[in-house]
Length: 417
Image (tube, rainbow, N blue to C red; front, top):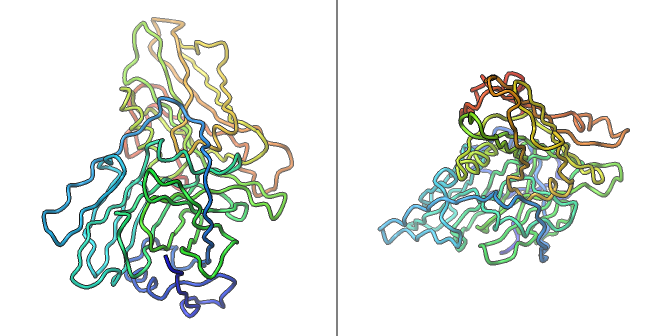
């Protein structure tokens, strides 16, 4: 792919090093804005650096995901079929559109993910079938992190077909869970299919004139400007230019279990720890559907930092005739299992047994925290603050998140979503 030409005339302020944007990109984004904060951000050039990636995962063996069926290609000979190496995708995680010379806009609202193909991207009289999807299968995630301090920050997103040719760059919106952006070193990785190894496309701060992509990041989203279709994911690690920098990302906990309380048998509860990105709830809900469980509650946001080997402590307290069956009500998940979880639904399990069979009421409180060193930067005060949730019934949590009869102590802030 050739280099992306830039024009400093499109920016409202004097161009800094690497702060450019393509002329062909401005028109469609002004016409159909993906996000309100998009136009006020500064864009940076990025570098292409190809390298082999080592497998680095720490996941639960039973955390597996399905993907949904692609729609059959149109019978019209003018539309090229959407060819994917992926297994079929689940319908909730994929959207399709017909790309014409007028362009196309695809959205996955649940995941706050979008793909914009500008007007004039393909020649006149051509029409192509294109798709945007969230890739959830573990086997597609494992190759990306390149070291023990690298971590996923966005979902793995696929746009295709991979052999689609465009005359103008496309724009993808990816949500991310990074806090304090200046503390991060961000990289964008890509792979055309499930066979070709992932490669690093962009690393902020290592730009050249021949960069094949642009990436802009704000508090909630990364915007990728490229001409190549395929799988993409945003990866990060603590910045090394200032020793005191500590990367921190947001996590969310979900508690799952049976839909009804068994009268005499034990109860198994699972606590999922996932990146706090849009769609995290659906990922856990899907995992539970595979084993007949339901989603019972969600926690407040948890800020997890790259501080030594400080793991994640999960504490569970029971009242009302129940207790944890194991000798300890605390489980500690190693730092590497959380930081290098490769976008999978990492979880731990607690088995509860009755202490009073004639008592039906119960309450379970879960608290998650990270042991962090003293004296961290004041900007990182959120690190070390526990995330909490509580449930008082086995009624499934509604998809709109408003069901709260079983989570009276659950703090839900719209800013956390």
